[in-house]
Image 1: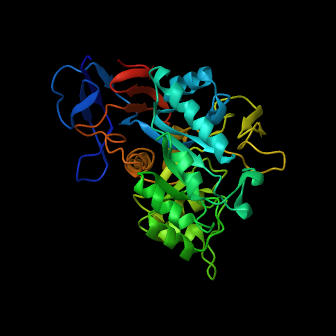
Image 2: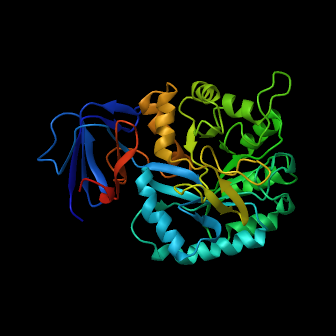
Image 3: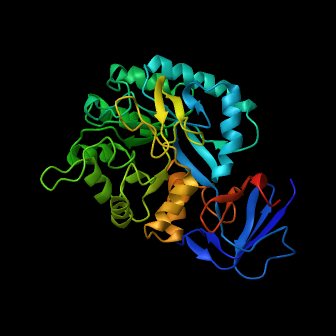
Length: 386
């Protein structure tokens, strides 16, 4: 594989043992798909690509993508997967977890097997890191857009059925359900990240889930107990427990700007920006599918069920980074929340950073933080550059 040398007026760097920061200017040298060298000062040779505006950042990592470009990932055909994998780099995303929402466990297991079989044939593009199952082990009281008919307890046989393919990397569940703590321990021992979500739990129950191994909270403030001075819930524990990383849908519809700023201030270095994108993302207004049920994408705002329930989002992850900067978050912290933090959570310390030895997954963000070019493994998969 050819080498690549990129210089940038501004570059995010994540050196081992040091906090993420911005270098002005910086360079990245890539060899065989891996970052061989990154730093400040004169580059070691004549650059192949010179970025004189914007920001060179690690490729974005999205842990919650229900669908995109008209396709719902749980039942997308091969053409749908090809479209999503090849086009997500347009949004700066270089790796993601397709998210399968609530369905009968047997249906989810079948979808996992189908996904396992088609992954080897996908084209170059965004990396598929595994699968996120959001449900069916959720609370009926906090179901959001999930079908209540399929919600159930995380029985051992159900957990085994989902683990069979080895594809599941993240499971969202409600820790107050019967058997949930045992399920968290089983999943954690299997190397699966457990996230608390769609939950009516108390803060104490979430603390017990963290004791059992849970390390994330799914879309903080949405479909969960919140911040109450005498009855603290999921959101409170997510903010005060250093073991937990709160996921945040920063489209400024799911969570107001002021509440999003609170999350970043209360949980510095732990926030995970996610899109929770539905099939309507990247598409014009109209009717689409989420988990086998229709959703409507309006002219403005997120997609909705017929009853008005928010059903995923139309958010781009690069847009979420820009929104974070827009509410006052430091640019390095905003990028970190969409790169290093999610990558580390799922055990992929080779992703989400610009550092020697990491995969050469990179995105050039313009002054508005929109992706202008994207590289995966050192190969350009979107936009300008080499």
